Image (cartoon, rainbow, N blue to C red; front, side, top):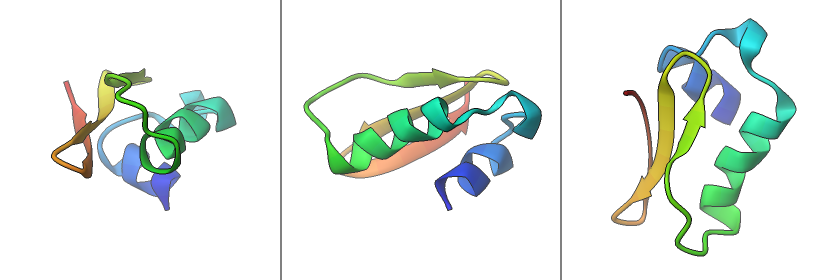
Length: 57
């Protein structure tokens, strides 16, 4: 589901690897105040106000 959301935001599927999705997952399951994650295709994932936000930057 996370991978689909990142691809839908504009990240090219062929450039997206498991490590990228694991980093996004940590924003949900292991959040410790880390900042935004830069993903392929100029897509950014971050936590804002307790929500995961994925968008093209």
